[in-house]
Image 1 (cartoon, helix red, strand yellow):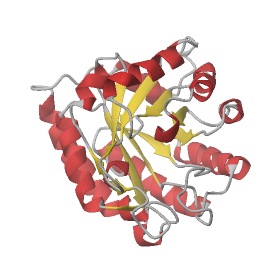
Image 2 (spheres, rainbow, N blue to C red):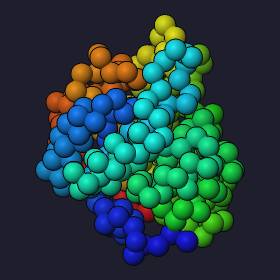
Image 3 (cartoon, one colour):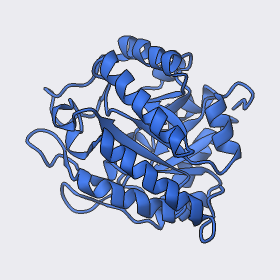
Image 4 (cartoon, helix red, strand yellow):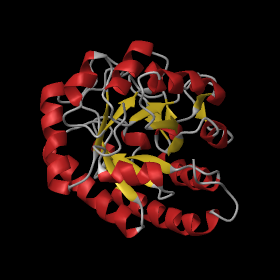
Length: 281
């Protein structure tokens, strides 16, 4: 069902070449102006590094720790903001869905549908995403073994859609902590799909704050560099103009200048890594 002819050119190139993809933006949509500023900056930096770029942000964070936490502008308003970003920045946009009906509603705006890690086994949700024909990015659950993601892949493939990405975002390590096993990158690539590394959620401390998650953004660049050396086909980053004031995931989000430095580092690694890793899926 995935129609490469109708796929956004960025994703068409990503699925048919070794050029890395940078998926970056704020955790959740706040204001249109903030989103545009982040997207414009990240697109320019990604292109400067020779990478492909896709803007990401959630229209609704349905799995926040606290009932009082900011969730986002909602489906209708969020899609309008994402559509504006898509048109003004001339780049693809990605967001996550939490209920099957949202797939059909979102497919006219989104260029890639993301399945949240907590929902990475939800058959109806994954099949609904696959049925849109859009690329599907499935976050590996913090509770999932890399080889078990084959079942999620098969759920998308059952719809005839083979434009599939899996994203490593850490594994639960005791309480309020995550650890990354870099072996998961080549292991998931063996499933015949593109593999992305989520550098900022991997340093999250789930539920480790006062009614919210905390994080250790200082370790995100280190893990991203390691993931590139392990053969990741791209990197997922949450970035904000002022992480200290971000309405979601501020402690693990990167400042713009940190993201720029990281992408320049990844550019250098990408130039030499083909000598020692298989970057083609």
